[in-house]
Image (tube, rainbow, N blue to C red; front, side, top):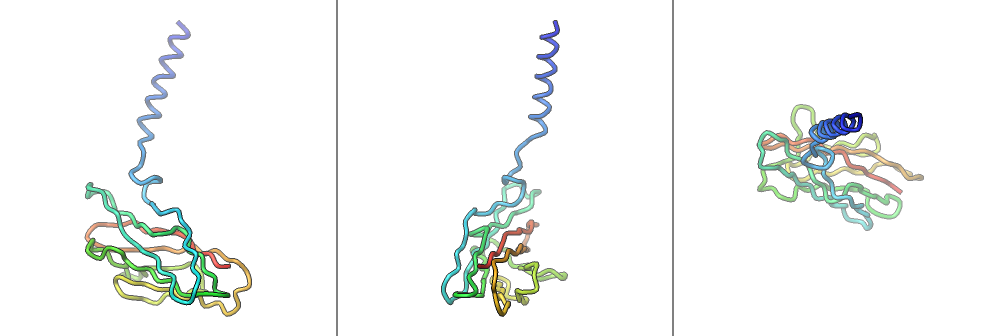
Length: 158
């Protein structure tokens, strides 16, 4: 009798946990990124492709996808300019520069990210003497016909 009761309690508990743990649509719920590192070398701008993905369910927000989740700048020997480009303009998303938003913001005073065009945005690393490796979280914001969640990948300097 005890074993039967314990088995029933265990079964009900497992069903309850399974019912509450429905997998979100995009891994952690809303932030799919390609798990790569963009190694920016050379003198031209470091180009990062940006896109949005939307499910067929219009009640769910769309998500931003970038080609690489980490941008690695080498400001001592190479480029100091990062350029984000929306890869599929026909999808109807543009960089959000309304209501005090900026399409790209980097949480640091060492990047200059002026308001840009709808489909391109750039930021320039302005530190005069990059002596040590640093990490900067940045935010990508898009707008379009459907709501889209911001994305917050990284820029690393060395």
